[in-house]
Length: 211
Ligand code: CO
Image (tube, rainbow, N blue to C red):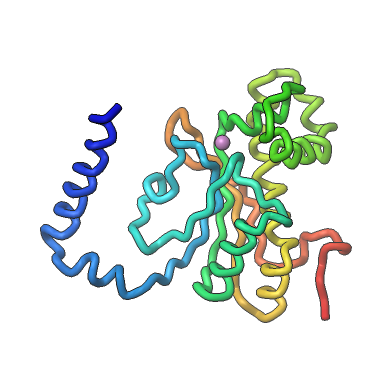
């Protein structure tokens, strides 16, 4: 335990050395500020490290992670990250990245009582309810689970679009593209769900904000 903990700090020193060996100004440059083109909303799962799986460098991705990569419209943490990313950093892309085998999504398919987290998982159950005809029609449990993961990402992309932050940005002519991805922990590959939103047009009428 103790050794594992010490190792982390040693790893850090090694990492600093590797970064500055050929580029002594590496950290001086990063310290001057950030202008990431991308906001990542992903699962807290330890197997889905945002930067690493897309080969992104420090300074490139603004990151928000929670259980099952949810966009809950009353979540002040998510809203604050989104507001800062859109209105201050002016990111051009927001990616919601789920992953097959997601424990949060798996829990939402059961009736198991876990604890406080049940209230968070409730949001994922709402996605099941929206798509219950399709999901209940899939007999194979693994296939139904995988599809639920995909539909959950899709709904979170829509929920992003419905936030006042994205609605205002689009209204003001800011170019922001919202994407939905699913990462496969079995082979490391990302599936682009091809649900990119660039404007209001695919939102149901009731969610479109105007002046
Ligand atoms: Co997960």
